[in-house]
Image (cartoon, rainbow, N blue to C red):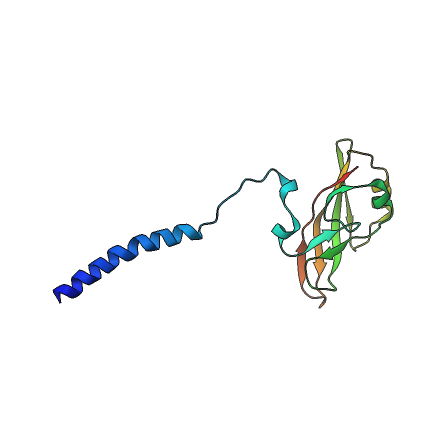
Length: 147
């Protein structure tokens, strides 16, 4: 019996530090990001918004003029955006415009075509229906900068 207690004591002394180091290995390391531009599609996971085939970043006036709707990617094929708010920032002033479909409204198209180099726009409060038309998902988007 004495030997059994001694072995259990040794075993617990051996396993205690092992468990401590194993827990330390599971804690993820935090790396500082250089800003919102450092976030990529892969880090979002789930559905993300595409405009002119892009998920944000730099966009030309020509690309803006040739597209009039948004789409969703990163979720079930056949998902469709049914609402979003477009925030257009021109010369430091921001205007919010709402849409209840995946198409840009006439006002949105006019505002986007009037943007010049250095202006930006962003899609917010974007929601999409999954192909079954019952489930709703939030759609992530990034800011677009006119070049």
